[in-house]
Image (cartoon, rainbow, N blue to C red):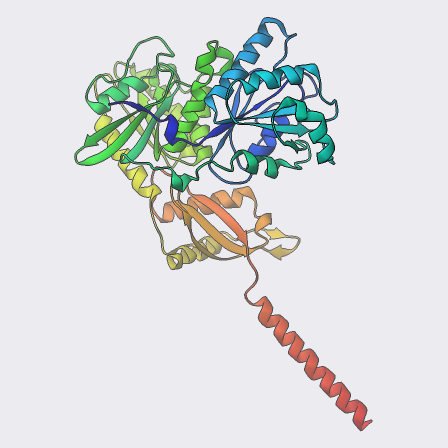
Length: 469
């Protein structure tokens, strides 16, 4: 029996408003990225943008939408339709208005339309660095959206309070029951054979397959028992470049695909060997890497490929996939079943690696070996000191390292540490996350005590000399 994963994924909220009120700036602040284009020109954002919220509590997604306006013609109508559809797909909405311009008729009309959606709505008054809350309440009370939240997307003020209010009643990750064994998401571009692969892994034609891209619109999860081991296979819609997407419904397949990736424990990225390695394939891999999930790469439709085309594809895989060198690459034929058994073996290996638990003593010993092989760089003439390491989480394995000047550790050295731990622990199919924490020097207190004692002794000696003199 198939079932949708909608109720088991991280909840999302949509950022909605008229053009040029600062929605994309707010989106970038909440996700701590620069993914959304920002300019002082109305209508820059014409498509939805999805990101992982990194302000406040963990476990939510954010959707940026194009500005809703009545004077942008046919394109404006499409943008407005997308924004309203975004709100339908999300748990809540954040309605953004421009605090410098003040309330206008468009804001009032949008507020009425948004209230009809029945979704929880929160009013964010942007560009109000020093907002007077009583004055804002008086001005915006006519919108019927409750208390306004003064924020500044440009300077980051008020963002935490807004996010805390939106996500206050949302369940944490630990509160969400997730069952069904190893959760495996099948992702990739349209028409690379994801549904065919899912059917082959299930051993029956459960998913609709067709040579036309975009056959699958939703993310559908199917339970599977194979050799006594439980799995949940999640077949997702294909992710295309936004410039190629016309259907409004299909635009939100990317939202559900990212939710499926986040829900999964292992992600299988399917590629088409006949199309070579495309930029969109690399984009999908980057999406998986950003979330930090275990990864297996399946190169499909290898059968019937000419020897020279196989050699070219292999060269591209070796040259362009170095940033995910931890992942196993499997050559398969979803149609004929070639290599699918080995694909399950890679999934099991990646899952096992992602759930590893390592004692603190062993991690600290490995840290010292890494420091001995390659020391951290100097910062203002001082050496960065990393003292001990311990496990901070699983899926992906997260290693917490304590030391001083950790904020000055460059990204290249963090990548070196992640690769060193992964290779030393012989982990396959999963990235390793490094979290650096600033800790007090355990010898600092002792040194200060000695200094105080020496000072006290010197003062006693000085008093003694004065009495004798």
